[in-house]
Amino acid sequence: MRYAICNEIFGDWPLAKACAYAAECGYGGIEIAPFSLAPLATDLSSKVRAEIRRTIARAGLECVGLHWLLAKTTGLHAVDPDPTVRQRTLAYLGELARLCHDLGGRVLVFGSPQQRSLLPGVSPEAAIDHLAELFLRLLPVLETSDTVLAIEPLSATETDVLTTTAETIRLVERINSPHVRLHLDAKALASESVPACDSIRTSACHLEHFHANDINLQGPGFGALDFTPIFSALSEIHYSGWVSVEVFDYAPGPERLALESIRYLERIESEAG
Image (cartoon, rainbow, N blue to C red):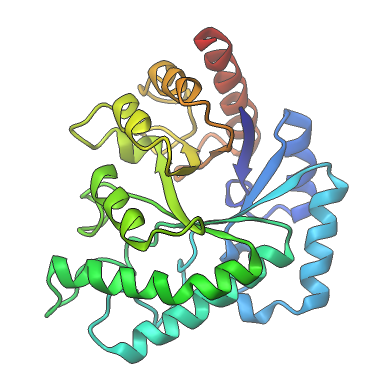
């Protein structure tokens, strides 16, 4: 497996310090939350983007890509009934694809539960249609920037649109492009009725990226979630993408979260063969 870590785990650490510690722990990549760099991606000049890319490379890391794409933005929504709002969202996602490319990354994890949940007057069917239209219109930018939008199913406690792996795969297949694929998240998989290992096996040809976290919102190994069947399934499908540690509860502190998460994952990978 190739292990990465999401940079917001490190809070207010300078990016250089976060990258250096991640490399020291044994991570090969870092995944960036855009809001941790600037309020908006459009605030980052080409000069600043180039320096961020150099900072990551100096630590010996790769930039995996971006996640939390629409977090801490206003006026953006992927399934808003107003086409002008969807157009603004499309334009911003395009800018994020260019940012991802400029940082040396490839994957754009589309979770953004608040900006894809149903709004008054929008049916579940219409929401999926809006997403399909949005992602199809995004394809030219994804192709030019050589990036991949990885759509993330999330639990029903977070959103009411795309809450299972199966329905997310249907959307990916509807778009039918190598630049729009599937992202899976351990915490979200645990909320589904289908066992995580089965979802991984059935999504093998679509799976682009994977987040490792626990149902207690901390890192892998910090809670009750057993990663052994997950890693067995990833190994079985010959998954060769990144496994990124993502955390929502930072209470243990960045040092413990980073170090103990990768040590746990390495042990499980070894035991899983």
